Image 1 (tube, one colour):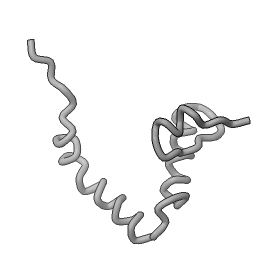
Image 2: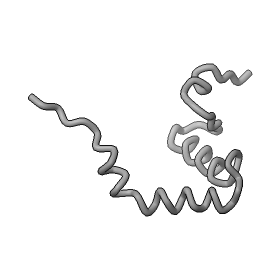
Image 3: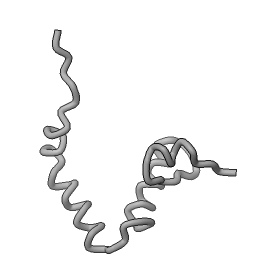
Image 4: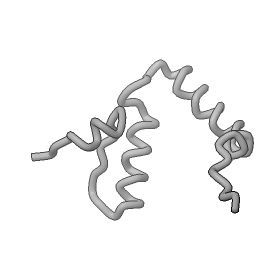
Length: 69
């Protein structure tokens, strides 16, 4: 039995215009860290998780070692 895996190229093709528009907005702003998109992501993710705050980090390793005292 062959189990289908996630079709990443297919998902990209389906969302290509939205992805490129988002990348374009970031590149045009010149704010590659701590820009409006990051703030918006943190707020939306906090809402999804039902928490007051969310902090975006660079990668999974940063997320695993991040501490909030």
